[in-house]
Length: 258
Length: 272
Image: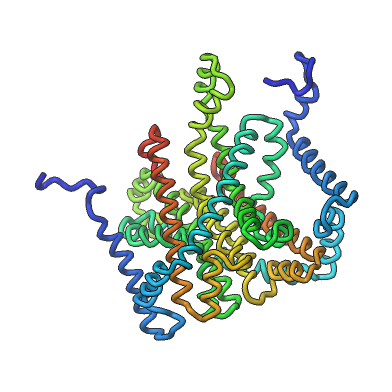
């Protein structure tokens, strides 16, 4: 329709793209001014990234990071869902564990890593356990809030309809808690990437964290930055997936901006 | 309602008491866990590297009084709080600016979306190649990490401010600067403080993480060294010290939050 302003969602996001171009240009200018191999320019990082992606060994490290991170996240998710919902639905469980979790939340669980290594060794088990430990807390907080967010009327209705406990959990409580659970996953995902990377700095020679430390020991800054780009892409893709899942699963909350 | 004790349907004095005082339940739960741990250690069921709670408390007390923990704690806290102050304040400031101005927000939007999920600790080795394993390198990484939660929450806080507040201020002839500091900032403060709370937690995680690589004089390095040398007492004391720093800093921020939001009807910030 001529003369009619295009809806905002359809207009190409020129300014946003200009922002990215500006940031990249600033980096390139800085690298050219510094003219130092510790500050690689964009073509150097890009070339390194392409080399890395073509290398099967690099891809196996990506896979290792992803598998262990996701396994830790899955364990944390299961534990947080069970504990969070139990605490939200039963006063005794709540009184027992909720204050404990609140107190432990601001503690950096990374300090426990030496102890986790002593218990589980330097292999993948300790990494998975550390990721699970750190991701549990943000997930618990959201699952707990979600378990509390069930509308009273819905519960009365379900009870009146003679819905059993399992039925109520599946059809009333879990759907009400879903938006909160997904928010928790969104908070936990970057935490998962941080912890996986740090534990790979220390542990046995696997994963992207190990690739970073190896590149740094060769003074290969472009190699470190190329891994950072890969990690950023993984995080970005994971985040988009959660947002997409939210749009799909929580269809009744259309228009809620994340 | 499920009865805690069988039989008594009319009066359940124990349950009523516990419902009214949930703190008793949590205290009993924690003490029970500690007692189990202590008992298992006393019965020698646990491996030698798991110390009993009383032994850890003794070690922590000894190392605190002889200064073995306080000096590393001071170094670690200085870096964590410096990074939090720089990253957090920049995050809130730029977040509010982005909330107030759409062009500014658009310029930042995609950059933020791509760089936010990068674990900033991955950049630490690269930064350390240029700056060395120094305080500046560590504080830089901590501030960059602390920036994002503060920025995102301040931005969302600013976007959620009731536009009528701006209209009123504008009608009263307030300048742009005045609107920014006297309307936008206080109105977005509750949300911004939620972000700062996450920033503080992130700063403490990164405080430990940045001490894992290179030589450092902080708590994280101290406890990794104790682990490598098999000095388990010192390792546990370090863990307790890190935990205490995290809990205390969080409590301080919550206290400040309550002071800052005292004018609000619902003082106190929802859990992040």
